[in-house]
Image 1: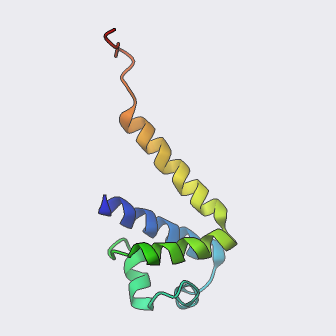
Image 2 (image 1 turned 30 degrees about the vertical axis):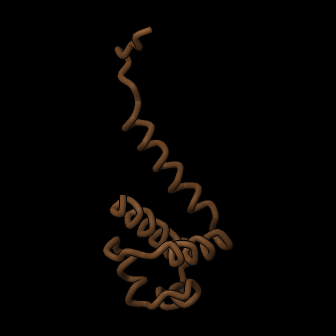
Length: 93
């Protein structure tokens, strides 16, 4: 599960960085994250706390909430494909 959270956070930060055009140092400051940790999170190598994830989401929600919606939509589609019952599946009963 941790890997999925790291991937989610990394995708959020990468998309926010692209959309905002802001330097990493400015984004890290806005999110109240040390720049060294920001780089780790953005690259999917860090392990942010729930408090840090809240800070990240708060900043992104203010400026680009569509980023969160887009990534969650993709994740939902992936889960639906993963757990989709085969067409030949029939339930007993």
